[in-house]
Image 1 (cartoon, rainbow, N blue to C red):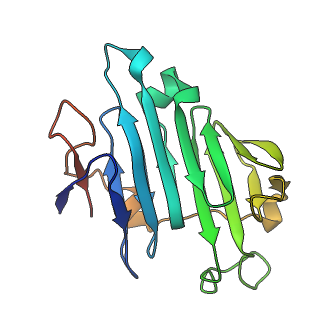
Image 2 (image 1 turned 120 degrees about the vertical axis):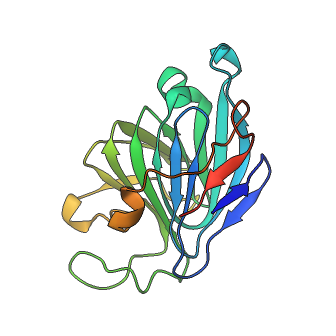
Length: 192
């Protein structure tokens, strides 16, 4: 199914659903069930890298994101805000899961539910997690956690990390919708 999406829009998934967004620069974001994300800004012109900007906010739930051309050529112009930290990318593939008394169904390595706060995993490249209390850089294969705005981000041992996963059908889906941005089917997303 295709739906129009524009700057300022808030996207929300409900229980049992996923949403995949493809941006004009090739970036992809997949939202987990019961998630909310706001597209704060997306500016991309292949011929004008100086005007690049991508900023979105994870308000609730979780997502996986893969950097597109914008993030590879202007990594400082891609940011993701979450309630407890801001994530800057460095050409990457990463996952975010924000828990606020709503992650009881997500298993932790060793059992139990994830703690409230922001959980981060990096598959490729690196991310910089920062808030009022500090900054932490995570590289491929690393995990991180941020309890809140007043607690510094920290690296988490792999055996305690949470990797945001998607069903195989979502992760292998080539998608048939358009892209978000100017140029192609202006402001469309593919939602499998």
